[in-house]
Image 1: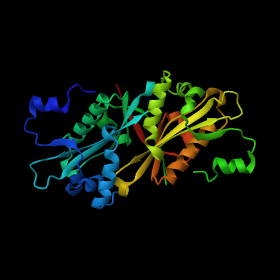
Image 2 (image 1 turned 120 degrees about the horizontal axis):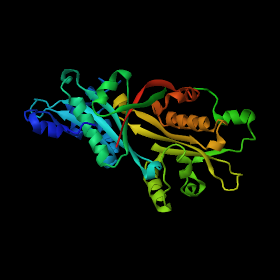
Image 3 (image 1 turned 180 degrees about the vertical axis):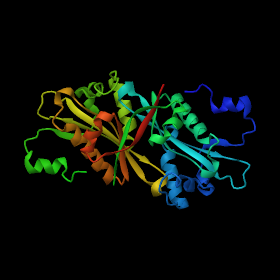
Image 4 (image 1 turned 90 degrees about the horizontal axis):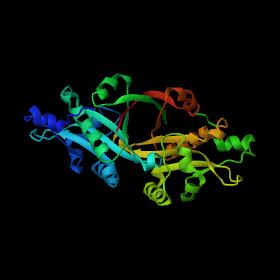
Amino acid sequence: MESTSPESAAAAGEISDPIHIRRLELSDHERGFVALLSQLSACPDLTASEFATRFAELAAHGDDHVILVAEDPSAPERRILATGCLFVERKFLRGGGKVGHVEDVVVDAAARGGGLGLRIVRRLVDIARDAGCYKVILDCTPELRAYYAKCGFVEKGVQMAVYF
Amino acid sequence: MESTSPESAAAAGEISDPIHIRRLELSDHERGFVALLSQLSACPDLTASEFATRFAELAAHGDDHVILVAEDPSAPERRILATGCLFVERKFLRGGGKVGHVEDVVVDAAARGGGLGLRIVRRLVDIARDAGCYKVILDCTPELRAYYAKCGFVEKGVQMAVYF
């Protein structure tokens, strides 16, 4: 892990960075959150009701399920520019240990190259550490190994899947 | 996926198979469940109270968190011979889709080679399908690719990790 957090990096010289990273809010349905996810995977839009239902289901997990989003508060519509998710899995092994799972990291095509995704992933890793997780894991394509290495991730295994 | 489930295989000719696969119960703490997990990862024993607390936390997830165990009901102490876990992650993408995560699959060293692990994994995959998941994923070492291929899994990516 780099020892420099996004916050301290900002303090050191990125004061003018206008991007704000915060937890997902219900109103982000109107700020293009689902459309952003469609840049990652098949993602038909959800009605406001469907979005609210899923939001409430996930909110019930409290700090065991965190979705971060990046926005530019000064932009006219405050569209969501990037997102990433962390959920905490509680286990019996490792003395009743916890594992953080990072999922659904995506940066809007027009906002890539500025380090937003890394800022979000580093923040998620910090949250997992603070929650007492003994590790954080994620799955990605081989091409993204170097990207996640910038956040301290090392390759540990292979991801296998069954699609229905 | 093979079309033959463990149950129909049993019906076809394994009637004498004494092994019973069921969900984890609180009393499995006394049947060596934690000791079995220690064959997979560092796993100090938990007190009865610690075990009960974690059991209750996971039970609160209902069918979104399933731990299966295999036991021989005719064995003197009914020690747990194998286990595997499935948790269901709810997402916003894929129309509010669900993903099954298979974790912590382990077969007791003395019970390996009999297909117990595959029976458990197939059952977990069936549960995920019935729960409406659009996929099931797991992470493993490269050596286990062929093992999980027997349950219909194909390699999809790499697993990355940060250890604290």
